[in-house]
Structure formats: C-alpha cells, structure tokens
Image (tube, rainbow, N blue to C red; front, side, top):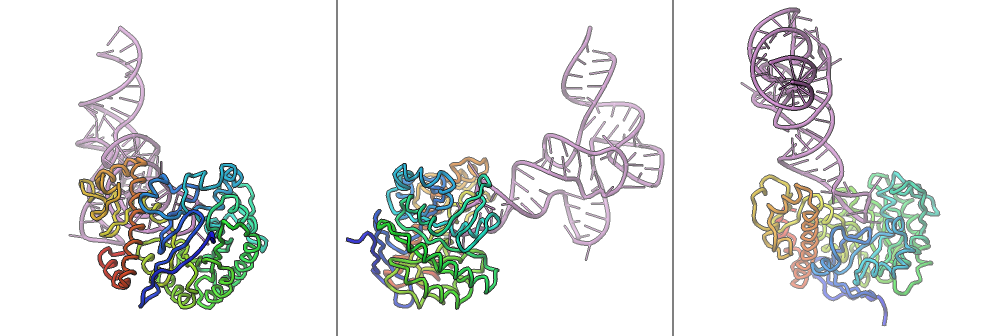
Length: 370
RNA sequence: GGAAGAGUUCCCGAGUGGCUAAAGGGAACAGACUGUAAAUCUGUCGUCUCUGACUUCGAUGGUUCGAAUCCAUCCUCUUCCA
C-alpha cells in the first residue's frame, strides 16, 4: 500500500474543474481544498480542534520560521510537528522559498542557496535546497515543498528566466536528498508572468512531480487577469493524474477562478490576516466590522452561516471586541473566515458534481460582489 | 484671606510676535491586506461656493503692519501658606 496516492474522482465537461482525492500518511484530502496557513506551528488564534470542526483537512506550516524558532531539532525531539502542535491531519510545509521573496531586503541569493539575516535577531542564517529538505524531514510534514526562488512581478524577462533556471537546479538537488517515504516532495513551477517561461518551467518540473506539483510566484502583486492568463496558459498541459497546487491564493473569487482552471489545492494567509484586521468574508460580500454602520447591528456576521462565531455572536459585539482590541474579536472572525472558505470549497464541489461550475461562478460573483 | 501656576482645535498635549488651521499622541471615520517580519499599514480628521476664502487657541478690551504667543481687567481650575 502506497503512502501517497492521487485519484481523480469527477471532472467538469466544459472547464478544468475536478474533484480528486489525495492520500497522505495522515489522512485523505478531498480536493479542491483550501489549506489554512499556520506559519509558526499555529493557525493564529485557533486550536486544532476548532480547525478540524470548521472543516480544515490539511494545514500549512513554514520551514524558515520554524527553523528560526524554535528550531527543527526541538520539534524533532517533541516527536515531530504533528505531535508538537497537536494536529493529527496532514501538514504541508513551505520550504522558505516565499521568504526569499518576502524577506528580500534581508537576504542574498547565490547558486548554493540563500543567506538570510534573521528577522528576529539579525543573525546570519543560510538555507540551501538540501537544508530546506533536511529541516522539513525533521519537522515530519506530509508534503514538503521544493526550495524555490519566488520573484517579484517587475523583475523583467531575463531575471525571471535566471530565477526559473535556479529553481529548476535547486529542485534537482531537493529531489536527490528527499528520501523519506512518509513525505512527498512537491516541485514548484516558476516563470514569473511570461507565458513561455511558465510553459518551459512546467515541462521541466513535471518529471519531478510524483504525486503533485505547485505553481508559485503568482498572486505576488500582479493584476488578477495576469494571474488568470498564466493559469490559462498552463492548464491544457497539466497531466491529469497529478495534484495541482496554486500557492498563496485565497480570495474567494480567485479560488473559484483557480478551480475552473484546473487547480486542486490552495493556501493563503488572507482569511486569517484580514480577520485580525477586522474584515470578514460573507455570503453578501466583504464586511469591515469596524464600520460605524455595524454599531447597533445585532445580527450575525454572515446571515447565511452556521459557524460558532455566527451562531452565537452579533456584528455589534464583534465590532466592539475589535474596537477595544480584545483578542476574541480576531479569533471569531478568523474562525468564520476559514469556515467560510472551507464551505465555499464544498459549494464548489457540489457545483462540479452537478457540472455547473461556470454557472456557480456567475451567480456567486453577482451575489457577493467579489 | 495670601502666594504660585494653568486654561490650545472631540480628548491628552506641543507651541511664547510672522514660516500656525496650529507638532505629536489618542479617539473617530474610511480603506488596504493573497506560499504571514502584519492583532499591521495607509488616508481623512475647524467651516465653506475648497488649488482660494472665512472663523478658531477661557472672556473682553488694548499694543502692533501682524497676536495662540505681549499688556490690562475679568472668569474658571490646580497646588502651597494661613
């Protein structure tokens, strides 16, 4: 019996949407799936039990951040990340490739790897492809990401091409050292916003994709139509029997557009971050809870939601919590937003089963204004 | 009763003759956030017929080309002494 398996269960006829199953050592994931992000071994503000209840199937964590604190050795001593954080379902760890992008002022890239100034104490740290995989081995996540170079949108063709080449050569090194049968390596397609680079990257990346692969370097500042254009370029060339993971995408409209373009997996900090800053996704559009119009609104955050935040509390109360900076406010909205996206994926799956995904998109966008 | 000090735009608070509609906070209001250096950041925040005009710094009167800033009187508050 294989530790990892990927199966397509159902497909749309007039677009690339599909329902699949991804088997991992910690359970089976039904896709399309939204994966909440728990960078520092916690989805900010929520207990694993709460995540499980709201429907999360798999969560993300982060190699760079856990390497900096508390260190992978400590997590290994604790018995691995699952045990350390008390989450017994699948975990995907990002490699630190995104930090190459987001901590760009604090790092220096060479062919060997990336030198970071720790954002915590300024100390010099080094991550190579081999080290990124080594750390992820110690963490014990189910899906490990290749160490890639995620680039800014505006770097131009030549630099984008070099970053793509570097990502491919780093991928080869990751592949060679990733030997843990309980972990699956997902390679990452790069190529910035250039169609030919994207296609070349996909073609040269696929040989390394045993169960699935991901598309990185999108949703990093480029306009949405540009992202969709890249996905449209790639979609006809995906092998059917591999999971496709679009990294860092998570607004409701992008999730639907992604599924239509054949994406199976998504992750994003958006639902939890905007929650902490006071914004909720709802079935009637975005609700910025601090707005004065909600001062005496004693109805639920989302009128069509049965999550604990919506069942038990009012907009006026949550607004009050956010206004006085009480942590329960951020927690309740986080809970709701993740519940919302998880259930959006359920609705998407229903639409796929009925083969009405395009109709679903049209109705959804009209209803919510996203 | 005597002495010292203080009153600034919603609040706290800087400013002691022109560069001041008045620093800086806070509150309020609005917005952003997409593989988390984010419970963060940005904008607005006297009024209007708004690239200009008008009214504001306890009150009134005065000095000056010009006053939140100097002078006089009054009002209010704080602290100290009896």
